[in-house]
Length: 557
Image (cartoon, rainbow, N blue to C red; front, side, top):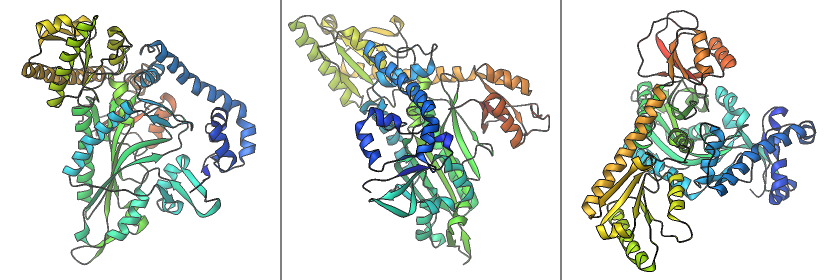
C-alpha cells in the first residue's frame, strides 16, 4: 500500500482530538503525506469538522505538547518533578530522563528507545518461555483485517468501533472493502481456525503472536495508552467448555506469577463485571495493580470467549461421536502497558526504580580517579569486577566516561533505575574492596563499604543484594496497596473512599445500572471480583440485597 486513507468511525466531536493539524504544523513530511492522501479523521466532512473544532483542537494540542516540552527541559536540568507534586508530570519526566521513550510524529504514538525496549524484551523473554512450556506456539497474522470480519460478532464490533483505524484507499485506488488496522485478532484468527480445524484430533489448537496493535485513543499516555502499542495475544481453540475455562484460568495465573515474581507488582486477580468484560467474551479475568497515584491499572487479561466467535465464523469440528460441534475459545494478552505499570509502581522522586529481574542493567560500576596513574589501576579493577559478574550472568556496565563527574553519574544511573551501583576508587583498589549502593534505599543507609573484590565473595554478595532489592520493592508495593484499600458498607462510604483517592471494597449485588451510576457519580469502576474473597456482611452496600461476592472499585487508567 503506497498511500492509505485512515478514517475513524466516530462522531465529529471525537475528530477534534485526532485532527492532523499538529502533525502538519510540526512535521513538514506529515504535511506532504496528508496533501497526497493520508487522512486522519471521522467518516464525515473533514473541512466542516475542522472549521467547527479548530479553536478547541489548537488548545488541546498546545496542552499535549507543552507537558512533554517541560519534560525535555527537566532532562536538560537533570531533575524531575516530585511525584507528590504532580504525578503525571513526574511520569513524563521519568520516561524522558531515563530515556525510555519519545513521542512519535503522529499524535498518540511513541518511539520506544533502546532502554525502554530492553525492559519490554525482558518481559517477552519470560512470558515467551512460559507460553512454550504450556505448549503454545508462536505465529503471525496479518495486520490488515477485512471490515466484514469485525462485523460478524455483534458485541465485538460495537465495543471496538470507536477505536478502529480504517484503510479505504490502497495503491491510489478505492478499496472494494475497507480494511481494519489490527485492534485485536479474534476475528482473523477465527477465519483461519475455520480452515485448520476439522476434527477433534485438531484440538486443542494453541497459538500466540507478538505484534503491534492500533486503537485510536482520545487521550494518550506513553506506554499506558497509545494509538499503537506492542503486545502478545494468545488464541486457543478447544473441544469443551471446561477445557476453555481451564485455559483462561491457566493463562491469568501465568500473568499473575510474572507480575509478582518478575515485576514485583502485587496484583489482585479476579473476574471482570459484565460491563467491563471484553467485547465478545463470556468471562474476562484480570490482574489489577495499584499505581503510585492509587489509580488501578489493568495489567493483563484472559478471556473465555465461549462459542461466540466460533458461531459467528462457523468454526466447527467433528467430535469423537461424529457430531458437528462449535469450538470453545480463549484469548489473552499483556502489552507494553506493563512497562508503564513498572514505572508507576516503583519509581520515586529520583526517577525510575527497576526490579532486578527485569532491569536491563542490574549493576553499574563507577570508577573514580584523579590522576592518570590512579586511572589505570582503577579502570583495570573496574573491568575485572565487570568481567567477573558478567561471567556469572549479572547484567553489568562500567561507566568510564570522562565527560561527567562521579556525582553526575550517580544521579544519572539512579534516574535509570539500576538496582545496584559499585564504586571503585584508588583506596578501594589498594584494599581490594568496593563500595556498593542500593537504588531502593536512598542515601548513606543504602551504602555498604568494604565489600571484598574476591570473585566468589563479590558475586554471592551481589546476587543476595539483588534479591533483597527485588523483595523490598514488592513488599513496599504491597504495603502501599493494602493501606489504600477501604472496606465499605454503604454508597456513601464508597464515595468517600474514592474521593480520598483510595480503592473501595465491599459486597456487591447491584445491577448494571447501579454500576453505571457509581461510575457516573464517582469515576470509579468495578476493577474485579477477586478470586480471594474476604469475609463480608453478605449484604450489598448499594442495594442491601443479599450479596455472594465482594467487588473492588477504583478509578483507573
